[in-house]
Length: 294
Length: 346
Image 1 (cartoon, rainbow over the protein chains, first blue to last red):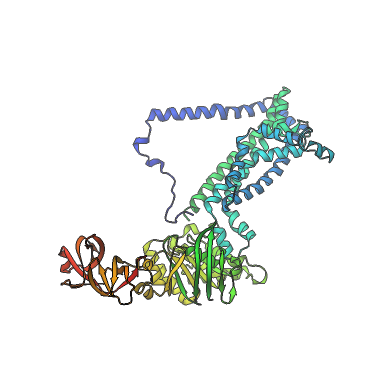
Image 2: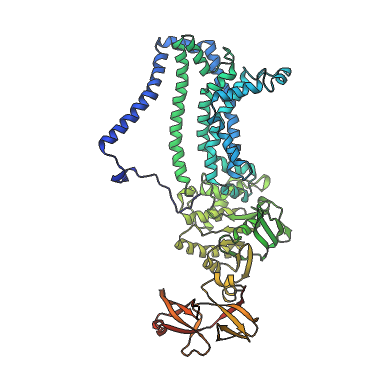
């Protein structure tokens, strides 16, 4: 909601002055370095994954994916994502709303707290759940007495996944909502809308692209998380193995073809996410540019 | 709808933004809240709207106490400073929003909403732009959409926060006249906030001058300009010059000389003399007058503005002379304020 007379334009690359433009050789070297780096560290591994997955032919590939353990791992991964992503949407919107639209004590603390999963090693977040819910843990005895199983079962995996993925949606929305301020909501209320209508018709459409972007990243991480899930899962085949864990087990059993077959699914997911993310950025960038200065 | 603000006080985190403000707004009136930034004018507007609740005091809509009512219940049309148009909705959807969110039988059919929206867009001279998005409109057009949207809910009071603040001077003047026409045509009780005195004096039936969280003066443009009731209003509205003076025996003195102004009613002692720079008589002989040495002279449009140094302590005052007046060439100018006012020194 900047001054309407101030329009933001994308920087004009072609109008860069000669003083900051490198000479031709320097430009070439920089580009070669960048592309070589990306090729060796990002593209090559990706090619290797698919190459290894199909090393023993298509039949071996489909067979590996059709095995009961693999299918169970895929199901569990989808289930965990299906639970943790909606939870993080609700949490992310609430936290962003609270932080962006209200003034309260402890706001800075809450903002820092949201970043915690990014700054902590996932293994530690897994261990925290072991300390809390494990047999010797804080709530271990109580849980056992009531017959509730969290650790080495699906609830533990969901908890660990929620923990490591919860910054994605919130962090995407907070700056967006802060920039948009309260004006639109106040306008909606002044026109007679109740709080829910203001949220549904005004707030949500204003942040929809940012939200979608956050959900996409959150989903990719939920499906790909290894460290935290590894600690709380217990690696029970067919029961508590997610896809990343299953890849590790297969690999450790020298079943490279199957390991890479499952890995190729995860890599495929990453590629789809990347494409969607790029599409969103194009779309969302245009939206932002159009709505800014209004 | 009459609006009465009764002894309202508003604090933000214990910092007072308004002290004991009272104001009566007549039905159908067009009122300007005028003041420098931080004077509390926007706070007062938001209190009337119900976007803020008063810390103390009450706000009446007619006979009804509206103080504890929410903004939805008050049924006011509020035009925000940056319009706050819903960017993902078309112009028509923006205007129809207030009708769409109504519940039950008060909610018109989709067709009726469309009809009303296009009627209002007619009124604000934006017919044909129904399908546009706010980003595709100019600043002036957005302003009109915002006004149409606020009027769609048939508000009891129309409130505008710096309605022309974000527009360039040309559009601003045009819209000003246009707002006056709309007001005369619809008869809404209207309150608008501005820091532009020209806008306030030209547009409003009555102007409320505010400073530091209090109302300084309420009156028509003539009253505010011709009889300011405080040094603040004298200084804030229009051009003014001031000189520290002394009142003795019903005469006004600068240092040890009487300046030919008698003030039998004024209290004895230190005071400040205010006058308008253009409202002075130039005199030839100094027999009870103000004399000064020309320190600077500037040509401002149709007049010449001269800065004079007066008395031993070289107090500077400004007066305006006709461009071709011979006094403008002299190094010494003698004058007497035609209309003036004394305020006791604080």
